[in-house]
Image (spheres, rainbow, N blue to C red):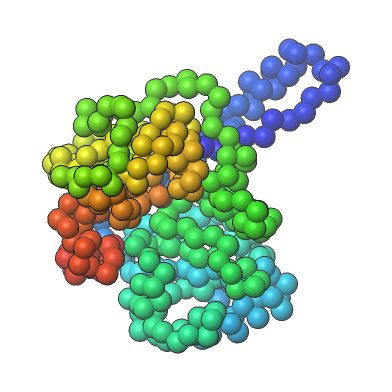
Length: 354
């Protein structure tokens, strides 16, 4: 999705002028969307790489209460904690794509101090409640399954928004506006995006389908009987370039991914539809209602549920082949039951930084 602002034309303008202007401007809007979407597909295999942080990131002693005070003295709205690691392709995208765009950099710098944390680091942090812990323990406490992760804290030290994973520039801009303009105080990010960037009114294209998706009706209730396989739900929508990439030959149709998917019950849900669903916890909802309840902020989002209908984790940001393969193995092998989180399992299992 992309922000599309329709200009107001006085009534005395002829329809022919309006149409010609629209024909002229529409390719510009398409180009802007495609220019952002070109960053979605990349090789996400972990490998030795130094992730260089922007020079304007704050050089912090990791005394977060003091960092917040200093930010407020500079008339900023709060701080952003960035959780990253070496070897992470998604972290590299954030630094080399989003934080190379002048408008994103200017807006971020104007309203926040950004503090970088290493999810495996041993430096001691004093959190905003005065507790002392290491970077690694802090990341674990905050359930950081994927890097990069960003937590926005407002002037009161309250969490305003959390982003898990890499988001393309247009979505990152929306996140900045959501926090800066104070919308987090009155509505979820899902609700904000629904107003700011409404879904298509007409389905010009069908949603991507796969043979391995279970057909409706969607009775996903797992509270009455224990299921035989974990559940994987693909929340998608029409006119979604990121969804198209996921369904391409390089990801879902990869041989290893296809083999892993057989170990799941897989369901596809259009997040804007009125399709009736009984959720894994036994509640009756429409797809649209459930998506809002789950506060989904990205399409596609992949949600994993265990045999009893409890959510294990979700991938709600850009995803490519390596991360998807690894997460499928993490869930299907049952490793989620014994590992502190996905990142710990990935590091120990593959001896790689993902």
